[in-house]
Length: 121
Image (tube, rainbow, N blue to C red; front, side):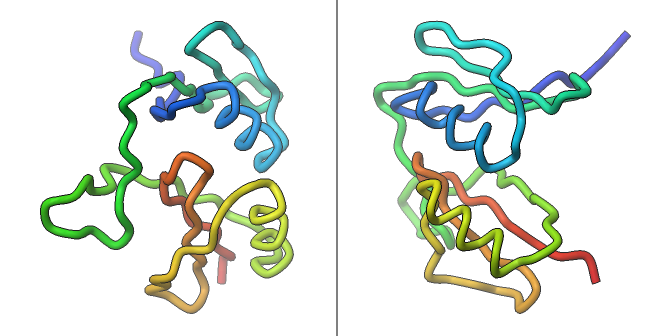
């Protein structure tokens, strides 16, 4: 059997980043221990985990030669791009300066990881 259970993001504070995504996605905190936390949807399918790394370096968006580059990003479908964008900022996200598409908004989570909010056309 093979089953993807989570994508893991590093942060200097795993618990803080887990709380951000728990609130952003309306998911449940499933694991919360020193240096590690996991959030999942109520149905228990694949979620996100967070690992404390005191040397975490936030990626740059867009990428810059010689600096830590983004290795992945999360795409989050929403119904209302403007409202969910405001909510993301209230929770601690930052709207990225570079926005490559009109129907997608790129944000940086509190640890600097880019994520996209988008609306299905």
